[in-house]
Structures are given as C-alpha cells and as structure tokens.
Length: 269
Ligand code: ATP
Image 1 (cartoon, rainbow, N blue to C red):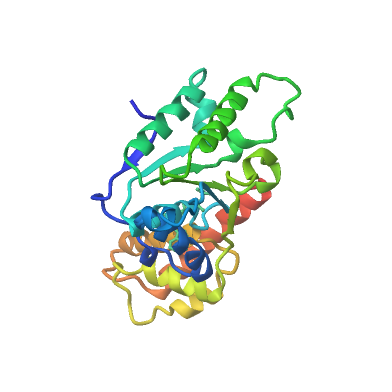
Image 2 (image 1 turned 60 degrees about the vertical axis):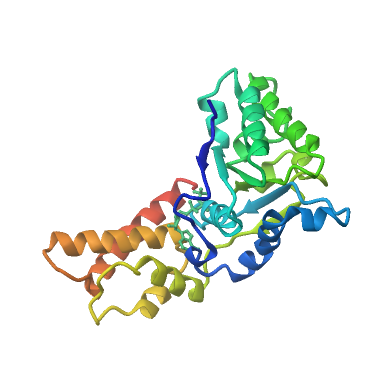
C-alpha cells in the first residue's frame, strides 16, 4: 500500500498549456522535463541529474499544477504526498511511508515525487524544544537519506512546495538535495489575463464580458482565486437562470471572492 496518490502517464495529462502566465518558471522547469524525458542522454556524459526542486510561493499560485505539468510534459508518473499528512495521518509510520514512496517511484522511474507543504515535515530540526517532534524528525531524516541514496541513475526527481522557505531545515537545501529553487509569485496583470482565459475556456460568456478589465481589477488574486471567481460567476448566472455568464455575474463573484481573500489575509494566511 503506497501513501502516494499516483498518476500514470495515461491519466488525463496536465501540461504547461494548463499553467497560465509563469513563463519564466516554465522555462526554468523545462530543464527538468528534458532530464526526465531522456535521462541517459545526460548521464552518458557523466552528468548527475538534479534530485530536488523547491517551488516556493503563496498558496494557490499553481505550484501543484506546475509539478503535475512537469510530469505530464515528460510523460512520467507522478507520486504526490502532502507533508502535513505525515504528521496527522501516518503517526508512527512516517519514515516507512517515505521509504515505500521512494521505492515505488524508483521502480517506475523516470518519475516525479511531489511533496506539497514540505515545511510541515521539513521545519528546522530541534526547534520544537523537545516536545514530541521525533516523528517529524524521523520522517525528515528518511527523506534526506533517500535523496542522498540516489546515485544519480535512478532518474527520480523530488519536487517540493512551500510557502514558508524561511522555516526549512538548512539540511534540505544543501547541494544534492533541494538545491534548485524556483519562485512562483502571484500573477501579474498579463498572468491574470491568461489565467482568466484558461479557466473560461469551457464557460459560455456573453459578449459584454471583458477579461482584460477583470484582470485589471483582481490585483493580488492567485490562480486558485481566479478559478474560484470564474466558478462562482457561473454558479451565480445559473442560479439566476441565465444561459451565459455576464460581466455583472463576474462583478458579483469578484466581490464575494475578494471578501474571502481579505478574510484569509486577516487570519494570517
Ligand atoms: P497550495 O500551496 O495551496 O497547494 P498551489 O500553489 O499548489 O497551492 P495549486 O493547487 O496548483 O496551487 O492551484 C490551485 C488551482 O488553481 C489549480 O488547480 C488551477 O486550477 C488554479 N491555478 C493556480 N495557478 C494557476 C495558473 N498559473 N494557471 C492556471 N490555473 C491556475
């Protein structure tokens, strides 16, 4: 039994086309795609494929989506776990779960392991004043030793995501571990335009809908917020028995979503 949710290459593929904006980030990650597509090409010249990539950015900016897209672009399986699961669900067995996960990924290499919220297990060790963090430390130590155990021929790349890079144990960031860092920021105006385009692909829009104006009035929103906004607009339009979504529906949903985003900010999200 593996802890990881596994996605095979035959599943519906996420690709870079699903990730709007973030052109620079996608260009950085293309290198990882190339490694995974043809690891031998790089290993033949004695090169060691990178083991770990850290995606750093606020929640909802598309880190999971990007990791999935890297796997999709390369056509390799994607094994995903969440750091907080190790703390909440796998009490007493965190380290062995990590071992199983890496074992499975190696058997199906080239492959990607995605660890969301790595900070939940990867906080600086010894910072908990001894208060029952052994479990977490053992899990973290297991991740480190698995990564150190790669000889570079396994072609498994671990992609981790965090919005708290400042609390990470420096041991995670050492050469040969998560030594490639990619920052995923909130989208720019152009990014928001593109995210609106992607998420309204299958939504019937009235001619009065102006996605440029929407992009202009959603400063600070993430891709996840925009997806939510589009969904709320469609639901509101349907509730009002409309067969297309109008600009007024977007304006209504925007107020609702902005209010939610504010509340999260106040709660320190
Ligand atoms: P978290 O830290 O909460 O896990 P995340 O950065 O991993 O957040 P995702 O889970 O990838 O964010 O984003 C949630 C959803 O928001 C995605 O599945 C996608 O629908 C949408 N989304 C986010 N960013 C983008 C983007 N750049 N382009 C298109 N859709 C996006």
